[in-house]
Structures are given as C-alpha cells and as structure tokens.
Amino acid sequence: MSTTLPKRHDLAVVGGGIFGLSIAYEALRYGMSVVVLEADHVGAGASGGLLGALMPHMPARWNPKKEFQFQALSSLEAHTRMLEDETGLGTGYKRCGRILPLTTQDRLDHHIERAEEALDRWHPQSTGFTYEVEHVGSRSDWLCADAAPFGIVYETLAARISPRAYLGVLASYVRDHGLLLEDTAFEGYDQTSGALLTTTKGQQLAADRLVLASGPACFEQIAAFTGEMIGRGEKGQALLLEGAGLEENPAIYCDGLYVVPHDDGTIAVGSTSDRDFATSAVDPARTDELIRRATAFCPALKGRKLLTVWAGIRPRCNKRDALVGRLPNSSRVFAATGGFKISFGIAHLIAKCLVVDLMGQEAEISLPPSYLPEHHFSDIGQDRSP
Ligand SMILES: Cc1cc2nc3c(=O)[nH]c(=O)nc-3n(C[C@H](O)[C@H](O)[C@H](O)COP(=O)(O)OP(=O)(O)OC[C@H]3O[C@@H](n4cnc5c(N)ncnc54)[C@H](O)[C@@H]3O)c2cc1C
Image 1 (cartoon, rainbow, N blue to C red):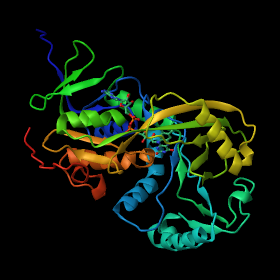
Image 2 (image 1 turned 30 degrees about the vertical axis):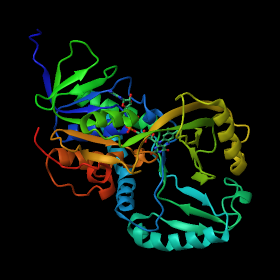
Image 3 (image 1 turned 135 degrees about the vertical axis):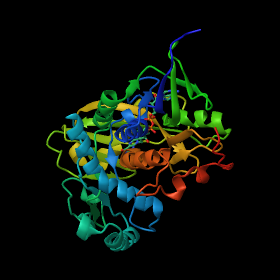
Image 4 (image 1 turned 180 degrees about the horizontal axis):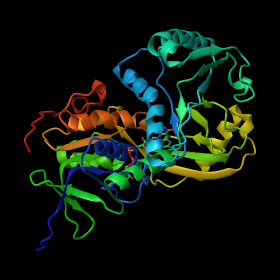
C-alpha cells in the first residue's frame, strides 16, 4: 500500500472545455484549490472548434432563459478584457453585430415587432445594443440582396470570439493558479472520502466537491450517479476560409448557417447538425455543402481558400437547455453541461452562479429555472447527505 497522502483539493472539475475551464477559473478566483482532469487535451471536445459565434436569443416572448443569456452576452466583453489583462493573451473577442435576412412579408412584420420588443428588453439607451430592420439592399455588398428580398435585421449585441484562443487564456490561468492534468481521465469518485479515481496509475487525488463538465461524456457519468440519462451528443461540422480584408464585416445568420469573420483574417462557416452519426470525423460531403450554401448568400466568400475543416460533438440535454447544479441525491457532485449551440456566450456566467452555489452563497444573478437539476431529472429528492 502506498504511503503517499492524497492531495486534497476544494474542487475537482472533469473536462478541459469551455464549461470546465470557466468553472475552474471562477473557483480559483474565489480562492478555492482546484484540479482539472482532462482525458485528452484542452479543447479536445466541442470547445476546440472554429466558429465562435456569440448570438443572442431573439427579443420576443422574453423569459428567464433569454434574460440570463442577455446578461451573459452583455458582460462577456468585460470578462474577456479582464482575462486578457490577467494573462497577457488574446481571446479574439469582438462585438461584431449580426445580419439576418428577411425572406417573406410575414418575417418582416414579425421582426418589426421584435425590434419594438428589443427596445424594452435590450435597454438600448444604457447598453447601446440595437435591433433594427433595414431596407431592401442594405449591406448587400456582404449579404447578397437576392437572399434578403424583404430587407434585413442588423443587431449589435452579437459578438464573436476565437474558441481556441479563449480556451488557451483560461487554461493558462488555471495552469498558473491551480492544477490542470491533461491525459488524465476521470473514472470515479467516492463521495464519502472524496477520493478521485483516474486513469493515471498511482495518482492519489481527492476533492471536497466534484463538477462534471465533460461535454457529451458527461451524460453517462451523470447516469452513473443518478441512474438517469438526461442528454446525448449531436454532431456538427464547421470550416475556416481565408478571409483577409473581410474582418470588419458583421456575422451573418442565413439559411441556418453562420458566417463569422475573425480578426486573424479568417472566416468561419458553420455549422451542420446531425443527431445520428457513426463517427465524429469530418465528412467531405458536408464540407462541400457548407461552402455551397454559404457562398450562395455571401458571394464575397467565392473562391476563398479552404484552410481547415473541423467536426465535433455538442452536448445536448433532452430538455434542450443546459444543466447546471447539484445532482439529485448527492451532496458533493455537481454537473454543468448541455450548452449545445450557445456555450461560449454563457459559460462565464454559469461558472459564476455555480461557484457561488458550491460556496453555499446567494448569487447576484440566478440561473434560469430551465437550467436547474429540478428541470432535468425526474427523481429530484435532493438528499444533501454524503
Ligand atoms: C460545429 C460546431 C460549431 C459550434 N459553434 C458554436 C458557436 O459558434 N458558439 C457557441 O457558443 N457554441 C458553439 N458550439 C457548441 C460548443 O462548442 C459546445 O456547446 C461547447 O464546446 C461544449 O463545451 P463543454 O465544455 O460542455 O464540453 P466539451 O468542449 O466537449 O469539453 C468536455 C471535455 O471533457 C473531456 N472529457 C470527457 N470525458 C472525460 C473524462 N472521463 N475525464 C476527463 N475529461 C473528460 C473531453 O476530452 C473534453 O475536452 C459548436 C459546436 C460544434 C460541434
């Protein structure tokens, strides 16, 4: 038997993606001692992607989920600037705005109503975030006029970030202030002793609390604690084109696709969605489809060199919204997953709420009810004993 005493941490986080690293960052800032276990490398999951679209929910039928995302997107710029100051590294964040085409009279009427509602919900006078309908032909050097026969919406809350750079900044902070163990897969947790079981032989680790933030793999890990499978993975594919000279353009959302200019002279295009998939590998037919669809509404992309293609698996909860909080019948095990298509815009605020919860304190901003365990699990007898 080994005589080495296990290193005990306040918190162990499983997963070096945007959720796991954001939670680790926030916990470290709170003064907790933190270990992150990453089975492969930082960004090995969906967070290591290319798109980085930070797109608001529509300002219609407002609800707590939309308000939470609004608060998250509104505060993300300051959050990334703070991270950049702390680490000396860039995140690629920019509030680039977004264009949406209006393709029917009904849509035009509908978006005129949304523009009205945005006046109430987005508080343009204090925030500067606007949502406006523009005339036919507006910005047609970027989104072609044929794709927008009833005009466009131009809104200025939307932003973009470089997913890989953002992760790199968070990982740098976590490495400097905590313990980030790559090539170390989580295998189990003894809730009585706090001992962690990992794939690294001879490693003795323990933690007072555990947060599962392992993307789609999280659902099986959660099921091991709760007996319930509350989500699954959904495949997506995106690509990068050479985009020098196009950096200042807003993002476009058209035909179910985003075109997102980044400040390094690349344009991200994505993404596909496949619920059923045999492999997580890139599908060349999907690459051709993405280029064909994007160049149809954004002719400035025609002939641009293809730089990279990437596919990943998004975590999606059966009840659609993210899960954040303590697992049923558990005192020490928490989970944060299921950000699906909007994780990058909300991760920092989710992390703040979760860490405050871990500390047993009241958050200034509450998680929306649809993010809470009560919404996701059928058996929610929240027994808090270990
Ligand atoms: C094509 C595509 C485009 C997208 N575009 C956008 C976008 O524009 N904007 C946006 O906000 N979101 C976007 N998303 C969604 C977003 O990427 C995901 O929702 C997000 O990355 C999920 O982050 P996560 O931290 O929950 O999981 P992940 O990024 O999957 O991270 C989980 C990590 O846990 C690790 N892990 C798994 N099992 C274990 C274990 N047993 N032990 C230790 N570690 C483990 C994995 O290796 C992985 O690194 C996109 C997704 C795809 C696929």
